[in-house]
Length: 571
Figure 1 (cartoon, rainbow, N blue to C red):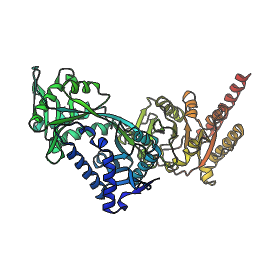
Figure 2: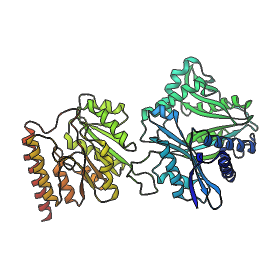
Figure 3: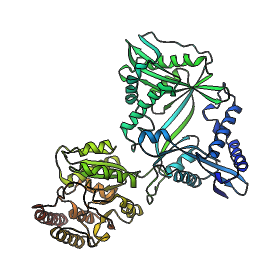
Figure 4: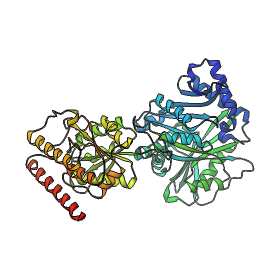
């Protein structure tokens, strides 16, 4: 029987023994990319790895969960998580990372998933990244069962200096050390040439911040993160760079690392990358016995360059990002996370949209956010973009129905499982999102409506508006053979079947009651959830002045036309 334990609860001697026994059983896995490196003795690598793991578990800065086989009194699994400071600072979120996930081969998927889940929960991060060897499919599948998203497959290649003879191609390209005044150009290159990586591979991370991450990485390399940055020039113009640093695998056992190689796309195919790589190897040659470089499996051009230059593939790892799911939202397949899109239609709501986006993120950090701007003239769309939301700018005003339908079309194209509609004026309380999607996840409803009247039957509103809402709620209830108390609520959740229907046909002007009746006639199941509504932060209701009289007439006429068409088609 395997029991999950907090390793910090064990005394130091017992903890050290259990961990050491587990590491010894998995030596080949721990050697990782260093397996077969002639310049670094295997026993020194393992000794260094053992010491590092035990220190991480013991120093209090890491969160560690272990598995113990009580019958055999031995450890069968270990997961270590830590705060990811650099990622957190760059993306402005509390992020963590799993630095080790080690299990005996016989440990099952659910046991692995449960152990990872415990570490992620204790980290309390909005996103946790993990890099797992492709040899360990079970752990990758366990992470995916928890909703982790595959963002990158990293290949590691190694170069050893047996018979190395550097050859540079004479083509007017000069490679030398970076100069102080190169930083701005190198930083600009860094923000533009890297597009295939774990940051850009995660749709929940801001593209602009992902771009900036590489610009910052290049700057940090110039200021000590790397031992040297080599720059390729043509006619004195910076056209590429490569970063080189030396790390210790163990006492007096050094190896080289190439972190970044960037070439101006205008000079692609001219051998700039080759000359940078050869120049880097020349710099490393007298300092280390081996050099390592990582690149994405999808970057076939880089892989060919490294292999032609004498590098050999030594390791493959999957990078996964786990955004802790909503409390009630369980992934139902092993094929990756189910995805949710929050659609926020806006019209001149600059002063409220920031709060709405922030509240959605706080409540549902794993959801994507799409702002559909219905031709605002107050800069609402700019605020949404600055906050990292996806934005669709409509060229002219379509009305609330047209804006929402645009969101449905985007959701259909990308393939989200659930969409949630939240108004941009601050009336809807995003803390009820979890309650709203619960019936959809349980499979009992296709559309879930947030009802202010179920939450507060005395919800304040004008007499005329209240009378209209009651009339259409009564009419909708009669025509759908169900009880609908708040048919005008724009706070809704729809599954794929429901929003796909509306992506093809949706009322443009006042979509509320007409859409629900159409959904019922299409065989969709509808339910209501009590939700709190607030006073709007910004803007005015679309139902005001003459529209209060136009709306009921137009909506009633639209419903009659829809019913007539249905009967005509049937006959």
